[in-house]
Image 1 (spheres, rainbow, N blue to C red):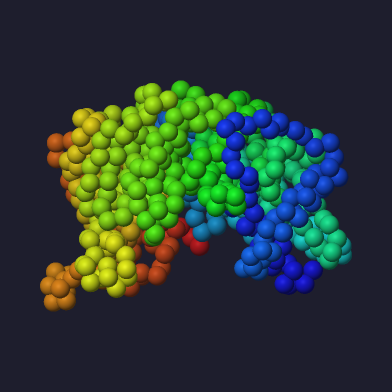
Image 2: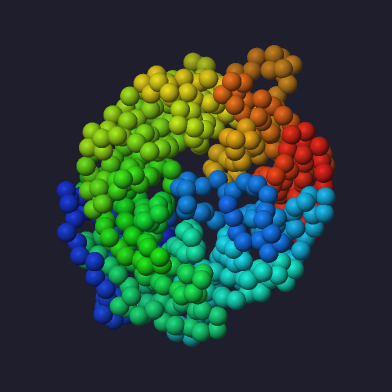
Length: 606
């Protein structure tokens, strides 16, 4: 294959993963889940899809609390901010109340963290260069590390690399000498994982299953490697839905029983996954599609049931529009609720929707055409209620009643400047919103761009009172910095540390500021970015009476000239007892939770 041919094939496969071309949706689905009898049958199936995808793209431009602790009971400590209680999410840092387990600088650090005065690095785990660690779990005396990796294969006298996912399981009974006890390598790019009790579920996407190499049809045989034993995945373990979709990507779902060591894998020819939502009983996988006949974008949803390591494909459905992220979905009383945006915000055709689907993923209730001309910036489902933030110039905060899944209703709306990228429950009557403040553009600026818009400003944190569900109110608000100020919480909820009982709210911030003198001198209208002045965490006390009370801030930077030294950027914070731990690739710093007085710090070696 020459370079140009390779680019065409790669482009086809990647594009086919993210946008599947399918027929208009039917009211119900009667497609039967089947297993292949052989790899020859699989190759034939993929060959037909490959031709269809190839033909479509040639019309365009194809080049174009807690773990067991040996030392005894641990003090109170924070956990990873997750979406569903009881469904743990992987992260770059975990704690069991005595030790901190941290992924930094391509290594895994096990740190004796408590008491802070005696904190020290107990051990470091180096990972081979071919295995790039992305996040971790801890479960009793197990440390689980997920890596993006690859393997080489010989085909037609040429070396081909195949993307894989490696799961490394360590016994950490002895924190100074962790021992690897299992090394599992699965074909496909690592997408995400979840942990329920002793079971871990891992999702990978294998894109390069079928391709043409030097005019020869080639299909990769799926493999799974456990320690030093390699097994071919039989075709009978690869499932597909016999339907007219153009699909050339396999989603692998792997279940690992940490207690028994048993590994269960099932592969589904359902396309690549873009977003995932996991409840205690189901994995919901979604990917966008484009309907040629109707020239519309929709979202395909697959429901895969999980129970004690068992994996079973159950249903397929679809809804109009595209989703934002995992918080656009939620399962409650066996109904899936999903929020989508349709149309295009730039030409004013966008609108927003909430669909409710039953166990067969058939739409049974819906609200459409919410906030026409805007798009969803954040969504949160809590019990039989939903909260939605859309945005174009101001922040409409919607309260939605889902108590009758067949007849959902928008009950309230609040319009305020700014918007929220992330919504977090404070209690049953209050919601925290984290996003950006905004200033509406001047008329001359709108005319110049032929667009009605607003300028993003500093980081906005707000508290909404929804006790009167039809009349939500913003009862507290703080704005940090000026245009350019940012926080990882806006795109990664695991960066937030919030504890209602401790009245603790900690958020990492990259601060950009414009002096009042400059604003006055240049008649500031909102379009100018500020100057970088700080990176670290802002610490607040948060209660309903006083709102956000600033306590102080912590940084790992020596001076602002370290702006491009990202290893000093704090990305996570956690607490153990009355100690606040802030984490960057450079160090872990320990401060008194009430006074923020520094107690100790540990440098992390590169």
